[in-house]
Amino acid sequence: MLARKSSQTKASEAAVPNDRGASSKMSLPGRRVFWIAQRLPRPPRLDPPPLRYKPTTHSHTPPPLRFPVLLRWCSQQQQQRAAARRGAASGARMSAAAGKVVCVTGASGYIASWLVKLLLEKGYTVKATVRDPGLVFDDGELDGAPVDWSPVSGVRRLWYAARTPLLSTSSSLYDHYAFFATLMHGAVLIVHHLGSWDDPKKTEHLRQLEGASERLNLFKANLLEEGAFDVVVDGCEGVFHTASPFFNAVTDPQAELIDPAVKGTLNVLRSCAKIASIKRVVVTSSVAAVAYNERPRTPDVIVDETWFSSPELCEANKSWYVLSKTLAEEAAWKFAKENGINMVTINPAMVIGPLLQPTLNTSAAAILNLINGAPTFPNTTFGWVNVRDVAIAHILAFEVPSASGRYCLVERVAHYSEIVDAIRKLYPDLQLPEKCADDEPFVPVYQMSKEKATSLGVNYTPLEVSLKETIESLVEKKFFKL
Ligand SMILES: NC(=O)c1ccc[n+]([C@@H]2O[C@H](COP(=O)([O-])OP(=O)(O)OC[C@H]3O[C@@H](n4cnc5c(N)ncnc54)[C@H](OP(=O)(O)O)[C@@H]3O)[C@@H](O)[C@H]2O)c1
Image (cartoon, rainbow, N blue to C red; front, side):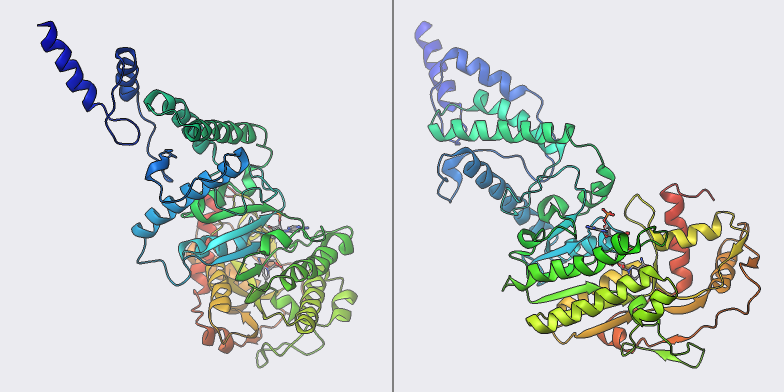
């Protein structure tokens, strides 16, 4: 009897697998711990998969046993596995972009958020700069390798670290290091999160984008900090420079608008000039840098990419934002030509359409002001374009080899009175301004050439659709109640 029991024990002991998949013998207390550990509730298998340190199953040579190196190596392993899984899941959608690294400056902004979203959807790895990243390591500590910095990842790693010694029957030095790396990584993530909930608004919407946990790296960078973009553009094939202040109420135009626009653009371009891997830089300029000069703009006039705004006129009219974009584009072209940078500018008109970011940007505010009980509408005529189309145009400007020069983006030029009429048709019950802000004749509409943008592959969303999307988004983001 005793002999039979002991042979049964031996058989069950032999069947207990260790964490490397092989069978091993285990003492009775060890088996109890193993039995209990196996039955502990498992954390949800979120994407990317939890780190499980099984050195013998890796085809790679384990890195030197130093914590920072190991931490980086573990993160890269996680990234590769997650990317492989993602790749298998969405292989059909991944284009030639898969594996390419690009940079987007000012990523938390209205246009840039859409750009980041579409780039991630196409399979790009995006190094995105924000002024206030909230919850990221801002020093490129992990060599730009995409890491899931979320607190969920931290909790999951702590949990796995806690389980690892229970389940593990091996006790190699490597496993101890791997265990501590997991533990430390989890702890660091959580502590970092708790210590940095100052402004999650700036980046939370980016972290939630599809593909962000694997292929979005956030970096802290201010336009006015010399060299701040060096580490970010390093290793990129393309750079999308969108960051530039866009607001009208300024007290010190030079410091608030012109310096960040001009010096910031040159700062980014200087960083790009140092990196040989960069094939093209796409700069977000504006129709502001195109259409504002002494030439008349009337219904028969077609404004196109050959037009340049006049800095003198902008200054005389105190159009500080327009001046900032005009000077920034001028400086960018000069620098690009002198330094052999392949640069393309995208020059959108007023951009509207759905907001991804939770904050209100200036061009969406223009529509909100109209529907929010304003007594009058401005006597102004603008070109209008959808934000999705603007983001697509940026990507096309990078991807299409023959793209060059400037691309104006305007679906339609319309006076504010037409915008109010279009909104009234969409929402007849809305209270909208009946009168113009002055008694002058309406500022005339003009035409803007669509030829170049269309040749790039841009298909414009109709203005009415863009208006509807903007208002729906403003409601969804709780800026307005219908
Ligand atoms: N929206 C339009 O109608 C329109 C039309 C034509 C051209 N554009 C151009 O498109 C670009 C994006 O505009 P947007 O409408 O998306 O505006 P936005 O939402 O206000 O985005 C502007 C971005 O620039 C960043 N930024 C400003 N100053 C900075 C500084 N000193 N250092 C680092 N980052 C700085 C902002 O960062 P923070 O979030 O930290 O402030 C923000 O991410 C701008 O170049 C703008 O001129 C816009």
